[in-house]
Image 1 (cartoon, helix red, strand yellow):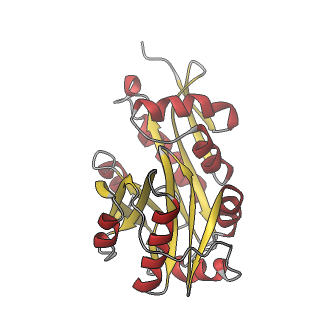
Image 2 (cartoon, rainbow, N blue to C red):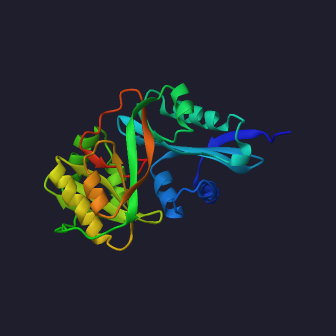
Image 3 (cartoon, rainbow, N blue to C red):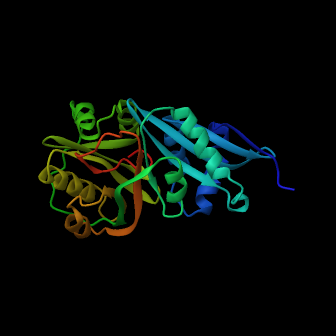
Length: 262
């Protein structure tokens, strides 16, 4: 007989088990990456006999939100746990427009909950090679306004959390964050009003990460593929961006904070 499943709030006590689930899937997330995600989100935990067998997060950014970190223990798949978690997250969100980044395996489930395809996200990573760059460190005074204009959402809480964990880089009309993540460092968000500023921010991130592992998640057709390759990165895979409801277009976003945060 299958153990009885219970859904409840995902809290800090579940993080070690969630980390183990993500490691089993080959995700690069460290304990600190999970802590950041949960600290900015509400979570749903699926428990069988008191043990975490699945989870998911909902992050609110003012007038829109993101669903992320949906995981189900391989030994408990085929029992509708993923569907139950996503349903609970949808109930938490109510009418809030939602975005997410899906794997091919997860996309059909999200489609059943009203999510539609909204483009691709490329995961570029590798050992960073130095690029000519004048590094401009510091939190631009207008970062929150630049981010709001680029994403159409209020991500001040995310920016504050990133300011505690990473370093902000500046370019005319743009900013980026370089922080520890997974196997090394991640550059993102990358927000810029045009390609020149985006290139400057990418080169700064590569220069500061030279010789170490760097990851940048970029929307499709970002136009930075040549620069990413020159920085020693390669596309290691893609995810499917999906949206439910009127999610604002992120036209000035050249690099994601993460696939979970957008």
